[in-house]
Image 1: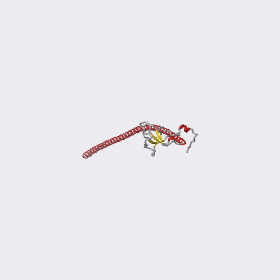
Image 2: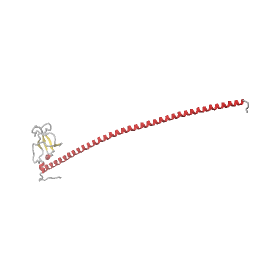
Image 3: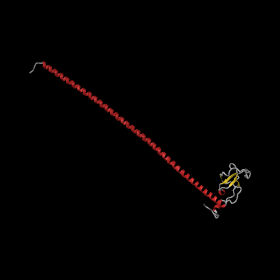
Image 4: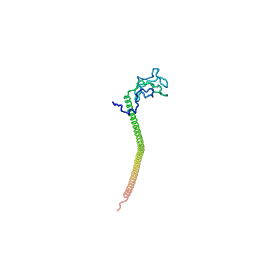
Length: 224
């Protein structure tokens, strides 16, 4: 446990040591103490300005930490006339120095926490700003990718449409060629049939002429 000797002057300069009851003074910071709270039941003492019964309080500030006192009941929207009367006498000088040192350490740590909090908030703000910039950048890239994807889908659709059209044209041309071949085939068949019929007619004529000639030769007397 730390200790301070009487030769230390810094603590005495930084914190006024209360070596006697200060009587009426500005009300210090207080803390809640269930065993010492509420309004004083006695008619005396009363606060100077308002002549009202004081409230029981426990100091929680500086070298008077832990001392009980009666304080002015007016706390808000009025003038507080401070400590009406101390219940506990001043603490020993060494204890007061210890309390001053503890409060000094508390304020230093609290100030450090405040600085850490400010540093943390600055760092958080910086990270948040960077995050927002990165998010905006990603959104821009996402928009570009969406545009490129849409364009790619259109190109692929056009390519498939062109391929389908090309296939349809090929099928159509094939059908046309097949129809033309079928037509030519029919024409050739008809032409062949016509030629066959012509040959038959020629053959029939030849046979008719031969038969007539034979008939005529049979009717005519023999020749030398």
